[in-house]
Length: 116
Image (cartoon, one colour):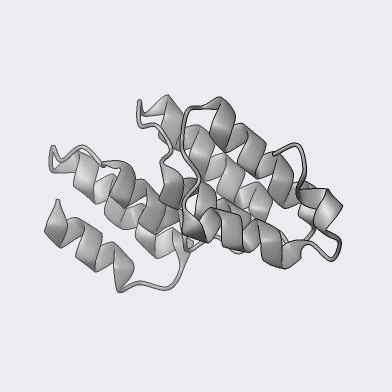
């Protein structure tokens, strides 16, 4: 597992990381949440990230705080970040310092934080 994950981290393009994920499965190694998060970090757009998260779930792996924080990093608007955080909370994943920092930094007006 560690070897495959390290190899994926060293690659820049999602296609290359995905090829390692395929090879990982072919070798009988089941990708874990860290493997999926490494793939996710190669995505350039939030739509691509959401597709990887859907694929991750289909493989029986639940997103963790790193997954959600990576998705949050693809957004800049407070409403989008807030929606991601609400999804995160709905799935029982606790926001961490990075989650809150990303949301707070995106807000220009403190009232936007209410209701999270």
